[in-house]
Amino acid sequence: MSGIIGKKLGMSNVFGNDGEIIPVTIIQAGPCKVVSIRTKDKNGYEALQLSFGERKEKHTSKPLAGQFKSSGVSPSRFLKEFRSFNVGDYKVGDQLGADFFVEGEKIKVRGRNKGKGFQGVMRRHNFGGVGGTSHGQSDRLRAPGSIGASSYPSRVFKGQRMAGRMGNENVTISGLQVVKVLPEQNLIFVKGAVPGAVNSILELIKK
View (cartoon, helix red, strand yellow):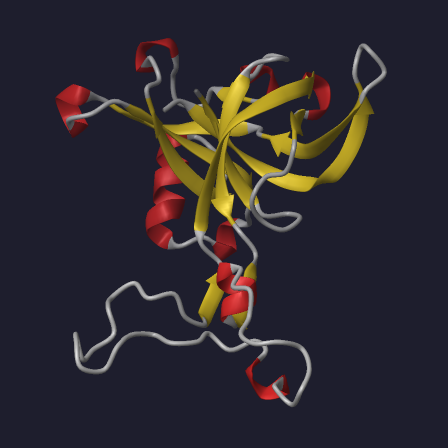
């Protein structure tokens, strides 16, 4: 899928044409520079390698620094490949920004959601809890309950919902509408929420 790299800046709201309040996420979409072009003849597939964010050369590894130098692009913090581009329309050094999107179109946003650490079954899996809220049952209110029978199968099935680490996973949300585009500031306003905390890196993908 074709797309660019962005950064989540926070949430706000805007007014629609009919006066409706629309909750939006403000995303810095680019600027992304084309660092490398993958072709079928050389790499077996077509894709654009895009960079995002600034980075000092002294903090860049030597292999990456050499790649940036040969491309004539200043070192960047993030590199990602996007397929489904018509690579013949681009050359190394081209820049993509918020004008890559148009108002009203639907996009997919991919990011890493917030890590919440070790959580119990009620928060992690929305369990209802066990027992009542009185008569001395306070030690079982948030318990997971039975996890299987003893005689058969005499084990716990794989995939049983239990307490454990929650969050810090890759999440993709489809069908998000671009409400507003500000090309001069490389900002887009997307209706609804997107994964991750403020300043987290996102992939903005055209559907």
